[in-house]
Amino acid sequence: MSNYILAGVGTIEAFTQSSTQPTKIFTSKTLQESGISISVTAEDIRGGLSNPLLGRYFHDSILEANITDALFNLQYLALNVGGQVVIGGSSLVTETVTAGSGTLAVQGTPVAFGSAGTVGWYTLAGQENWAPLTFSGKTATVADVTEGETYCVRYNANDSGIQEFVVPSAIIPSEVHLVMTYPLFAGGTNVEQISTSSQVGELIVDIPRFQFAGNVELSLTSSGAATSNLSGSALASYTTANCNDMGTYGTIKQKIYGGNWYDDLTAMAVDGGDFSLAANGTKTLKVIGIFKNGTGILDNANLTFTSGSTSVATVTNAGLVTGAGAGNTEITIAVTAKPTMTSTVAVTVTSA
Image (cartoon, rainbow, N blue to C red; front, side, top):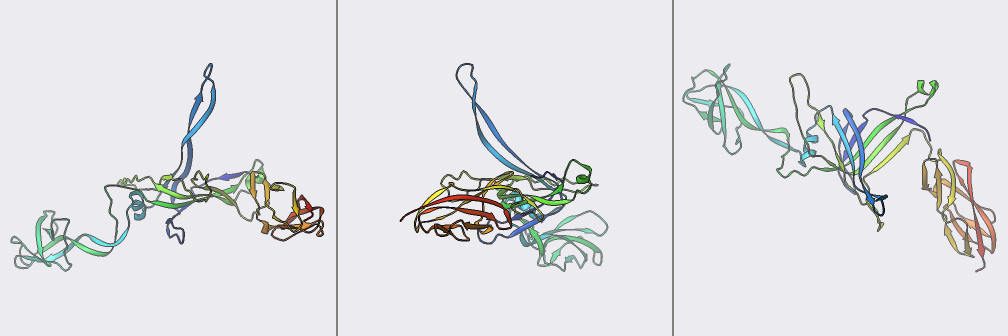
């Protein structure tokens, strides 16, 4: 198994949780910091004379992601507090108005400011002496304005282009399906390998249930910019029909560009080993691949099966063996794309 250099902050993608058609929420390619940490608490089990260590009980496992984006996105804030971004809202606007006789009339349509009604504020242009006023429609009656003078009037108005979300007092951060992708570069110990280093693949961290931490801080300075916190934790996901499913946090995958599934395959074996069949009996072979870094069940569609004696047993392209007549034979299994990688299993067929 080759060694690689894992470097850079990579990218992250967030999707809604759906068993039919997840919606892509965002893609971040402007990260300043990203990474994961996996930890578990170990409890020592001791007993007997001298209280030796008998074993360890592991509990409180956690997979956390630490993510910071250099750019701002309103969706990031909403996800952290469990809010839903909607289109349309109101905001304060400032309008330049020429005073009438004891009135200030605006072009826009004032709307309620909180629970105070359609209120506003005005000041003589160029000054900051704001005084309150109340609108009736688009006009406010103000006794101390001078007709023909220019005033600045500030009030609350609807804006169809606004995007907003409500911050609930009972915050429950949103859950998403998070995919983190990091570049892998060629690595080695000799000059040739180092000088030809280039991206050769990706490390992919796939978390089906990721919940944001719920921590939001907009820290701004006169000479700096705010960053966005996207950190959070994986929640256990139960996706199989196995009665003993203990749950998983996610999957970490290595993807090498141009690589073949059999590149690190060292051997193959049939699950259960040699077997017997009655005439006309059948069995579908389950082939286990032994790789440099582990084992796995191989897809029979990628294998070629050949019977040593079809009068004893036949085998289909799908690996289905059928007993034909009493005797012994071998089934040869080969990787279709690499015929030199083979394995055999002995079959004994008994009379019906």
